[in-house]
Image (tube, rainbow, N blue to C red; front, side, top):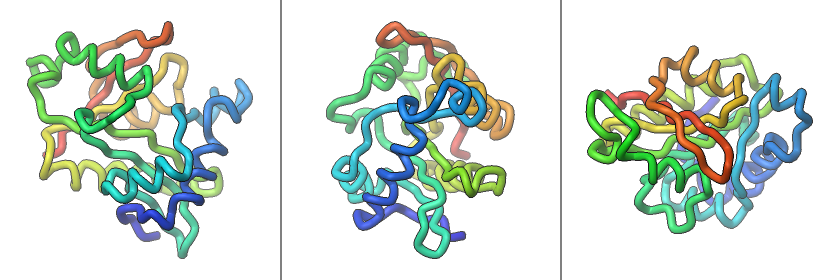
Amino acid sequence: MEYRYATEADGPAMAELFAANHHDALTERQRAEQGFVQGRFGVGVLRAMAGARELLVADDKGRIAGLLALAEPATLADPSPPVAGLLQAQETLEWQGRPLAEARWLLYGPVVVDAAYRGRGVARALFTMAVAVASERAEAVVAFIEAGNAPSWKVHVDGFGMVPLGDFVADGRTYSAVAAPTY
């Protein structure tokens, strides 16, 4: 397995992986068992993110086994409601004893792993790469997890040791902000 920055040529495969694991494409049971991703990430958006070096992928001999977005929050032109909610909550969320707004951080996620590769360390390797590449630009990576997405909580907080920063509400839905240091 090769872990690398995505290229624009990866756009269609990444869009397919994202769509297959989107909240709206899964049953309630699937969401409860495997988690889900949110937002609208079509081929064009993913190609642009790849061009900006905002996507990491797990590449299994040409098959995209997983992807992880890692972006500077200030550069997001049209943030989704949860991202906008996270940005608005920066003053009340605390990172290492001070408001998150005072920290240098990168937005971590979404992260998605193809069903055929789950349980094989792909998400952990993408997380490890994200923390390493973020260390030059930020002191933390910050994600949000929708209330009820227990699989994502289990992976990121219980598994990877991301620290809960607090909750916020966006578009009537509750999210937890979680973070990990990049050092």
